[in-house]
Image 1 (cartoon, one colour):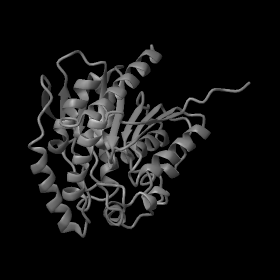
Image 2 (spheres, rainbow, N blue to C red):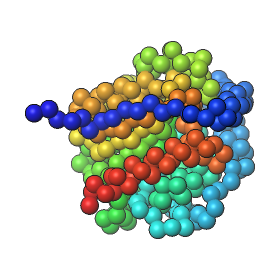
Image 3 (cartoon, helix red, strand yellow):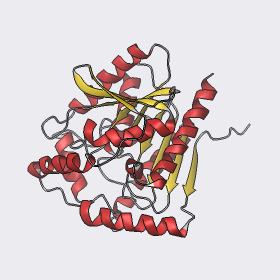
Image 4 (cartoon, rainbow, N blue to C red):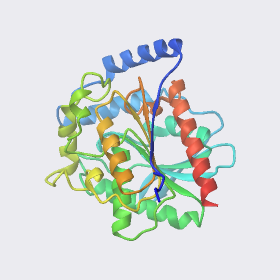
Length: 317
């Protein structure tokens, strides 16, 4: 008997010529102003301030409620839609393990929670270089365990982008090691899953990628891994035991250098007879859903997340 694969991959295209023109203008601006080489620790500190300043101009989605809280001694906040949410999402922000904050992700997550109809818990985990591994992973584990205790049977998901997506997958492997209950599913945008950068597109997409400067990634990775082996599954979950994981949903851009990470994960999950829905978006860029306050394609991507959550919730009943 042949068993149907639970893993599926789709290539999505932007059909409208007008939308492609608007998108190309945004991509040009992003390449000109944001594709930069990371030089050292002092440069990281400057980038944090720049990102915070830029994010302050991002509008919140109408009707959301933002509630600051402290969980496991970490600064966090609940972002809640005006409608009754169908699930709870623990969101792990991106930023190369060195950047990102509650402030930089608040506007994006306000659209995430509104479009997907979920309540979202965002938190500030400790960042490198001040706090290298295992600080960020330990923080994610602590807040997830506390969230499980508070949720009392309601649906809990984990989501993350870029390094946050890598951290989400590393957290899954850690949960399996420690026999802690899994989330209902994990959602990732452009996850960074291999800190040894062995994927083919790390080379072939260097010129096409409008945001990530490939020579900077090993520098940033070293700030987080410190003296540890970057091939360890806590840094590169692509190299871990990927059997018996909860369902995964990944969106990645066809032109980004991290595309191979998601493609290789798809193959490994499929071989392990696991469940992974992979969407490869044409003409998009690294972690494009982050621009949901401005970009129709970002909001469209979040609509796909909404449909995934609805299917997953229905299947659990």
